[in-house]
Image (cartoon, rainbow, N blue to C red; front, top):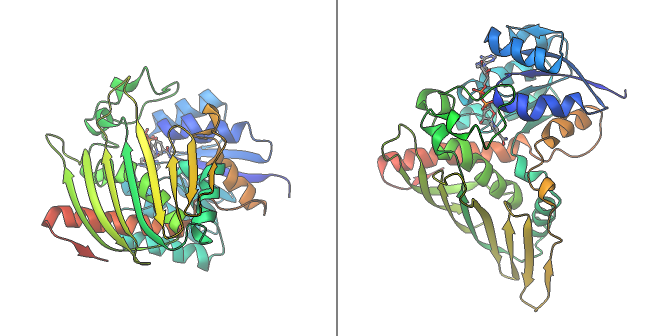
Amino acid sequence: MTHARVGVIGTGWWATQAHIPSLKTYEKADLVGLADSNPDKLAKAASFYEIENTYINYHDLLENVQGVIIAVPHVFHYEIARDALDSGVHVLVEKPMALTAAHAWDLVKRAEANAVELMVGTTFQFTDHARRIRDIVQSGGIGDLLHVSGLFASMVESFLRSNPEAYRTIFDYSVTPPSSNTYSDPNIAGGGQGQTQLSHAMGMVFWVTGCRAIETFAYMGNFDLEVDLVDAISYRLDNGALGTMEASGSVHIGQPENQEFRYYGTEGQIRQDVIHGRSDVHYNNGDAECFKNLAKEDIYRVDLPARVLVDLILGEGENLASGVAAARCVEFLEASYKSAQIGRAIRL
Ligand SMILES: NC(=O)c1ccc[n+]([C@@H]2O[C@H](COP(=O)([O-])OP(=O)(O)OC[C@H]3O[C@@H](n4cnc5c(N)ncnc54)[C@H](O)[C@@H]3O)[C@@H](O)[C@H]2O)c1
């Protein structure tokens, strides 16, 4: 088998910006069709990328593919991923994988039962730096993990305010912008900065550490929005390490985004600045290693998740964003939202 037959469900902003062009230009991918419940969005994407087969009902697409990419609003992730996995189809579902821990672990179980891959669109994990840092942490390279610190400040406030048009000059809406309610309606998005951005940031923490959270205490600020704009969270991992994560979606156009992690162990520390592609390791014996800075175009490889899915279908490569790490993130986020709501720590 030299080609994988894949389809895309959800033909909104991210699918048309990242996944469809990636598959169209990947020699190992056969992009056999698109599905979207909105006929206008479907027709626009199909015509822009010259794709013949389109489906209003995603079940019809599932019959014809080996793998599928699901890029629909958060609340629909679970149901579509579940149906795909149960059809024996390999899945790349966008982040957050699901909105409840029960749904997230159910997807992990179904992927195992059907012997198919389950990947999640946590794009920062697809770099050489992220892989090396994961390997150092999980092989005990910095000793026993004591503390993980994270800051994720990003430009999403206008999405959370139902105004994606504000970012037209920054993000590429060459086919379509996000629907105005995708990120701002709590019933659709499940939350704001937490669901849309901490799914990336804490996804990285669970993937790098290989841990689960056992306790979390969160403050979340909605201010005048319907969803959270700022999150400040303290947590405890199952290996005993303590963590903090701060996240703000309020970065304005033209201002720097700050997205970085620190891992402190008994034998050393790692600094991972994902948005600038800079990382280094400092060991207690005085040794230090500064990774070669990532080239600008390698910092956020939006084309790679789709291509790694194709490779996995062909029996090649590694699942760099597994369902297990993503499910650990979903259970953490669900508990953190609950903690913020009731004002006390939650044990998972
Ligand atoms: N990994 C990343 O960096 C990244 C970046 C942006 C968005 N995303 C994720 O991608 C997903 C989609 O975001 P978007 O900005 O493209 O949203 P969008 O609003 O632009 O598109 C969503 C599409 O899904 C379709 N849809 C809704 N319900 C459906 C259903 N039941 N069946 C089929 N189609 C359905 C809509 O009609 C729409 O075309 C979200 O989960 C988001 O978090 C990830």
